[in-house]
Image 1 (cartoon, rainbow, N blue to C red):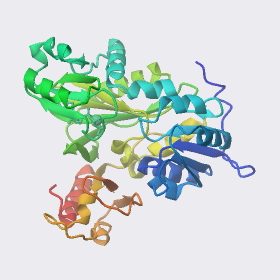
Image 2: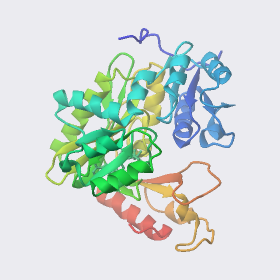
Image 3: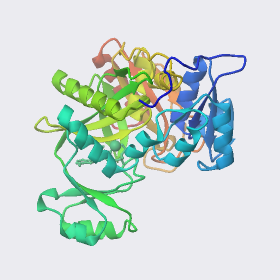
Image 4: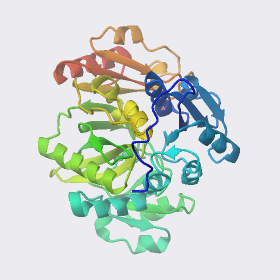
Length: 399
Ligand code: ATP
Ligand code: MG
């Protein structure tokens, strides 16, 4: 292990203040700031745009590009520890910050998650222990690579190796000809062709690991996507067996340990119709499917992120209430089927038992833009689901 002594933790202090830094100004940085501030830390955010969700919550916003040397030096000098809230943060910037501050997760761990091929290679190594493999796939850097693909990989999905998110940067291809046409439109970037698998449902597992190597794992979450964007997360997942949960949690723990990771990591999996568990991808940060932890777990994923980077003991990952998390997209600010603006009826949603509203302070709702989420917690999952369904009716969302 290359970490400094984990006992050497950054305890919140007022004189002088202990600062935690975050690269990126989105909603994940905002919710991190709220959790870190609740523990007494001050939070600095580095982000290119002044009007950003995390900037409104941070104690200090550095408006600068992610590779701006002066801004990185300022963040590194101000903060005891720095983390990231998005996976495409330049790994070089994290490496540079590491000369001045404790950086968690490390540049090397983040760079594996930034590259689908490196990630799948790494997952394949982990599978020797966990038995959980990624989807069959091949790298595509040229037309010749497409010619050489085995027929068994079709129908497939062509994904860019870097910079994909929310289903962007990927095209479903039924045949080799379609793969050629799709690859031609990718502007020459390296891609991976993955076999299209018969999914029964999708799950994710959050894990956190401290600098001392201690790890905790959250309950498995069942996720439903719509148009490539997460729609709901339900915990406990109605389809998830105890055996599937145990295998996915063990695989996530194997991944986080083998990466020598410090911080919060989310691993996404597919469960196939025959019950096979397949590892899809990982996010080196808190994750949208972990937002339920704010309202339903003893320690939220954001409080856990603050603890891990401050080298404090990790918190209890146990869930205290069943939960359904509903993502709120900008579409809700328009009358259904028209461009007439409206305000969602939050007063009616908040009247439902166990409803907790989280809005990210974005004042420009656009279709498909993540504006917030609502988590429904209840003594039983059936109650939480019922309140979620009522909210969908109020908001005009097909449940
Ligand atoms: P995000 O960052 O939002 O998680 P992404 O753009 O990185 O998404 P993936 O998670 O790889 O992309 O894929 C998005 C969705 O497409 C998956 O959640 C799944 O529903 C579907 N999908 C991806 N790969 C496959 C596959 N090999 N077989 C079947 N469905 C797939
Ligand atoms: Mg995904």
